[in-house]
Length: 606
Image (cartoon, rainbow, N blue to C red; front, top):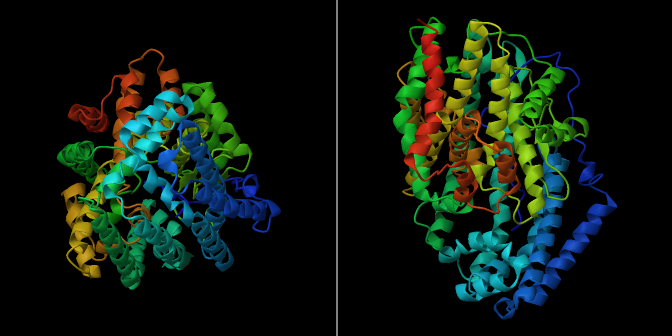
């Protein structure tokens, strides 16, 4: 089944206030002018016919094709993906703008169903491809350079070869995918429809979560308790979604013979399980010198005997509480991007001027932030929920980094542009780091420097420590679900088992915090995605060290890496920088940067 790629939310999205200036909205007309546009009908009609003729021409014939015939097959498949992707991107982005609108939800569902029906006859493509002998394919690649360019795509498809089912079962699973999507939509619509009230003010989930960063501790506590209360009232729905999704995954994985629930994610990420385990082990071992040490510092700064969960993202007492308006946010990020390389600023500029960003917080809008690549012949779209906090500026820098990456990788074409998730965070985290360093350079006082450093450390802990704790939660959840239905209390206990370990002894946990797993979309939409954040942060910290040391030609190598999209393995992409993610010391290098920032903060206490 062709699916809208889930626009994965930034791990640290949030913010809050007024007087933000003129916030941009999406102009989706570069995809289609409207849901009734004649071009949309034209593309749907074309897609139906193209899928039928593709199946008629190639089903049962792949093994007998010469290299030119196989290339024609690949190019036609790529064009089908591009048209289907354009339709679903338009339907999905309209829906994310207003998830509570029944018409938009119906339109997206109708488009998904049509495309699923059209593309069902194409299921044979990967199945037959995996039955072609390795030696035959190698001969094709050797004789046709245009076909050889697609070898990374073939390699990723063939990585699934050991887990492939019969043609009939694969078609059944393809059709059944629409049902699985309904659980994701139930989650999205439930989250978007939740209502919160803090101090008499009605809020959506984005506004309520934003209050956890409010300077007023009583307001943070009220928000945390209201979040817990509303999550608790809806916990049976969230538990049902997680139980169903995890069980569905377990059944499919069992039929496929996948050795672990994480195997499919590692395969799609083109990363070895041992590399992910090395990352996880390095982060967990570093909890005491990272999160535990930082939160002990923060506890002292806040003048508390013990931290509560609503203090985790509290602003520091000396923090500047002014609102950063949109124009200032744009200038800050663009200055940082241009200072690194004017080419980066040139790619980023149209996002602000051409309706490629949707920034305002609106009722019914999807929470968080993301950059959606759409299709390579159009351009990405960035969604934010911008509320004017310094962290929101960093979120803009992060999502714009994704956008720049997606624009550069588009030259690879539809099948090679998509970057494995482990490298998908590279440009986004690098963009954040450039913006942070620019802001740090401009700090006029020790206090300003301290606030910036502390904010960066918190973001890095959220990106590395918190996401690895999330990954551990998912691993434990899927393991537990394989032994039977999980009650809400079962899931709550799994959540709490990773929270204390990762956050450390500075914290006390209020009643109700055990439900806070319920609102995190990654667990539902992209199981085991979250380690990609930690992977990306560690990778960028190591990359930035090379840049800071003045590595020759760094900017050109960096752009080449982004342009590669999904055409190369992470080992090939990192080699020009002298880096190797399979080396355990690689992860220690990245974690040492965070530890070094905490060293500097501790030194300021003397």
